[in-house]
Image 1 (cartoon, rainbow, N blue to C red):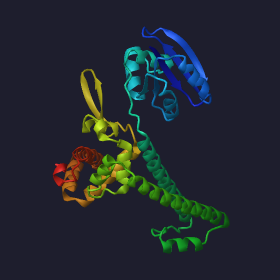
Image 2: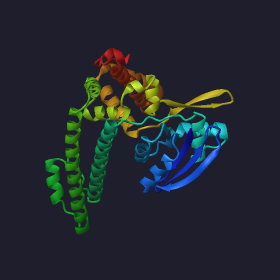
Image 3: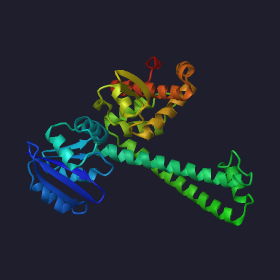
Image 4: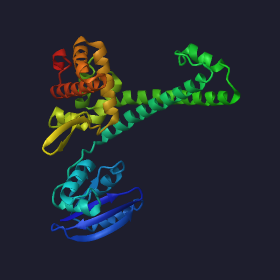
Length: 338
């Protein structure tokens, strides 16, 4: 059996091939644009196992080699670097290190989303991108108007937009305002289109996903945006061993530093999806505002830790409740918050 470490770059892939005894058999650099050359080289290595880090652009290579390999492994970059640092005294991950760890069966594997989850993530993250662009455009418009003491709270209502088209500004600022508003309208139309696409996408959901959507929607203040983000970012929660592991995946688990036999708890790790953390915090605020039980829990935490840490703790607890609901298939019950 050959063991292949793949160091994937934007233009090239660097390969290191080892045998079971970790002897280097081949080193090779191939262009990412030469799909046929890549396939030809790997066919000559059969049987083989290969490992590549879970970078942003691994999917094309994984799909290309999966039919040829006895086993394809997607490595978790952060966990692998920790292992490399503890065993090799540095965290450099090149093709040889990847091949060596694969031969030793020491690769910590990353989750590879299925085709439907990948599509769902693409749509949900693009919707968030459009929302961000619209927010940025609104802020720029308000910034220009503030130079004339002309900003107003209802600026993006029908009445406010009528005012925007007539407010007196210099010719350059008017030119920029008109372009910004055209951009704002354009992104608004795109946002409407992607919302419709996501509704169509949800209607084609398999039974397990449809049940997950229905269960999550029973939580007070949780709407379609939150449901889409949670479902697309987490996928099937059964792949996690515990709710604690889900919190770690979402970056909501507190970090810890050990020194001289003593441990100190740090802030949350902020690993994983920023979008998932954001939507959970927003959902936590909705719960706190809408329900007496969650509000009381938040106030008790806020008195001890402050509001910022308290709402993060609520978001973490909410995620645990979501995981419990998704596993049991039961609708939200206030007792779950206890």
